[in-house]
Length: 79
Image (cartoon, rainbow, N blue to C red; front, side, top):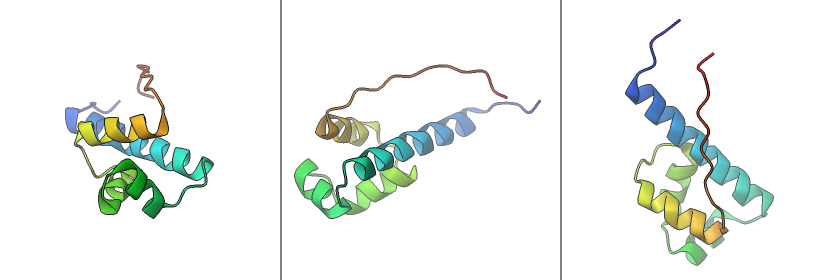
């Protein structure tokens, strides 16, 4: 079994969070440019968030509020 590092957990967390945001935008059939205008976040920042490369959590909170979504976190065992 490989060791779980803080950096691995952090990068995985933001990638999964970003993927969830992308899925939400896709399910609502909203274009990136429209979400950027309506959420008052730059288009490039939202793109980085959806890819998991942005790590500034306060921007995620702003986008969650825009989508009217809450976060539920569950701890799981590493497989």
